[in-house]
Length: 305
Image 1 (cartoon, rainbow, N blue to C red):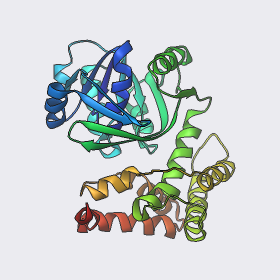
Image 2: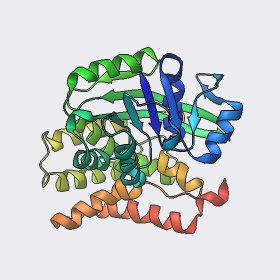
Image 3: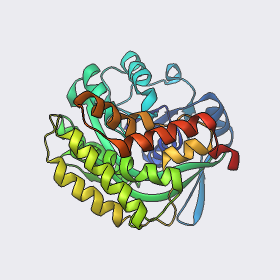
């Protein structure tokens, strides 16, 4: 399959690294990354071993020399609009796999593309840079992949991902699964980002998780969701309390420690936005949101890296 990984950062490059051997893949990334990886290859550390590959990588969509069957949209949520416009301009008929943490990207993509082109993925794979051209996969809970329309192509995509060594399962209700991850990130990953906790069942972290989820349920009831958000919240809470990774670096925390902009506006910030729209108080989510925005400004965490 011909695949473009658009706006590839740590997670996008990891996905491209897996797909590279059995497919025609080009990663589009920042100029600095593209230059280093083109010269020295991409090394990935996982499961106690390191492996380096020479992968195809460029710094602009203009430099992709084929028409892709699939575009993996790997940008941060705050770059969604720009990158969807790039895809629209270069590959308007391509299938698009979205891997962002929130739910904004899918709703935005539906405004620009046919629903049959959109294949959301709920990804629980941890990837971070530990060198200029070196990644570490620090946990792998795999991904769920679904379709907003065309299930026939979904079967092909599942096969391509699985054959490339990516842990993947079919989702029968992908937007429910995307909301599951969104709720987990708002209630739990933001807590990890701020505190580095690995134990969400601890008395004080559990308090935050439970109340954050309650608030999301309260605003979610005003949306036209095709699933019971109360039941989903119970599942997310159970998942969170039993989530015991040995290493966990939530993406918001990684970005804070690098002094970079985070995706918090599309996570807890989105809950705050919905709360204001519907007149629902969301004090826990707003506090988490404002703490992250303050740390973005002060760059306190980056002083310790």
